[in-house]
Length: 91
View 1 (cartoon, one colour):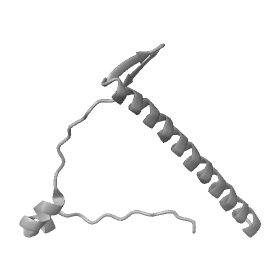
View 2 (cartoon, helix red, strand yellow):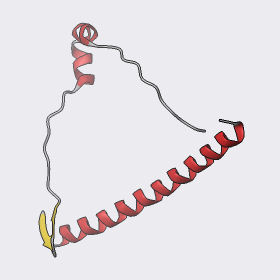
View 3 (cartoon, helix red, strand yellow):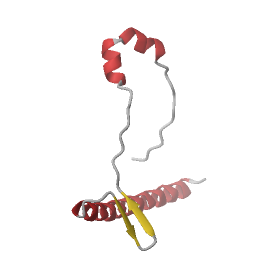
View 4 (cartoon, helix red, strand yellow):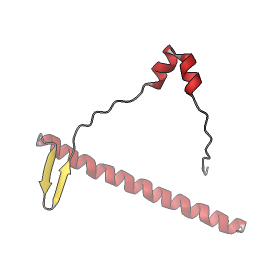
């Protein structure tokens, strides 16, 4: 791939990412409007036409590795595994 082709691809990618960001913002805004309406109606579930909308609380338990590391540094080090990955970025 030539330098010009690569530059063109990068520009196209940047434009598509900008469009994706705009769409994500629009999606979030619409979701927030629906959530606000559900809050106003004091409900976690609604049926609208053929759609069932749910906005429910979810409780999960997560391991607090930071606290574990602070109190059991030796065990934390013993069971910590280093991994490698690659990050793609364009600046």
